[in-house]
Length: 456
Image 1 (cartoon, helix red, strand yellow):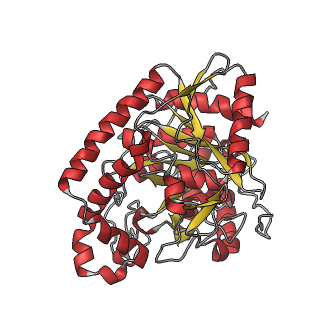
Image 2 (spheres, one colour; image 1 turned 120 degrees about the vertical axis):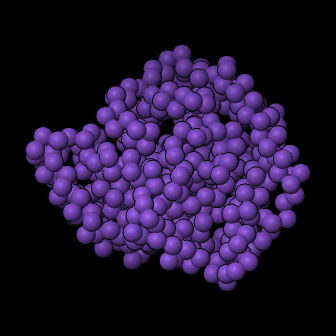
Image 3 (cartoon, one colour; image 1 turned 30 degrees about the vertical axis):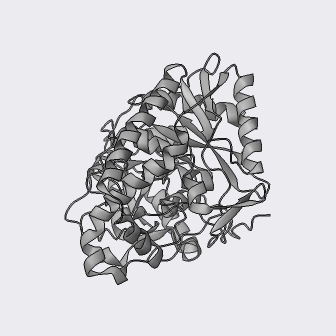
């Protein structure tokens, strides 16, 4: 059985929506919920290592302002008074944006990233900056100048990455929601591993300015939260809708679901396969119409992804790799050194492959309302594991963790991971929904319907 944290779940592990309702009826305060989050950090972060920087004093000051504002009749909307953490790739004025690397320990931001500005304008409280896989160049959160973040249910396992610290901060009650980045799955992977909802919006929909890049072509910004509704509130703030319309669940009866069986369901751990099949059966019982679809060039996904990410990462890091290579963790440095050998023709060929894959996903979605597949082929892997067995055959952890998510960074389609049960060890399993490009809102309505069906 998974070794669980000896501490009980902190009282602040509540949803954004639940806090908002309690706050507005006078049952709690923004200061109280912020203090509870800070207490959870003090109690558990020495073990979980979710945070690089805790903004205690400024968070309490923001919370007091939120309480005073609400008392004076100034309600900024669903995120007002809500403690939110940020992956330490986002610029926050006056703080170093470390990217979990010694390369950037002293790189103090002169201003807030646009995403942070939107959260502040929505009334959110920024409680701190979270740990990650160095420069977001990994899936396990192990390679960090600040040490690995640890899974809140089993401290010997990875919480996923690269937004691992962000996921842990929400799962352990240290924040009510968080912002992550997703280049190949880095929001959805830790969300699936830790039992959260993680949204990667349509490519280009949320600003990546003021965010340390991994691949400018494939980078996305989005929320991790406890529920679809919470993720919706944060997503709406990110696109400037601080007073969003309510999220309404789409009816599942008649919903057309496409399952990309080949490639995406070929390599699944038994626990994941069982949970996925059970979720599909539940949706069919609710009236959804399920059919198998095919992405013809799925076997080329990893090659297209690597050529784009490697080429763009090598370009961004070229100067510091020359002047301070010793400041990188060794695995990330070696990966960046390898990335230098991508040829220009390989990069351009990958961009052409991107267009082919995009057309194929568009075609699949022309006949279906949503695509459905697992988020991760397995549950959270042990820290330090190079391989994980599936059907008795060892497979590289990094390749497995990216296998089901990276396509939708390549194509830019919105994708969301939802919890869909637990494996035999008690660790969470994630279900992934993919929508049409530029229809993230439609995807969220469907996701709410799916979330409710799976909860029944």
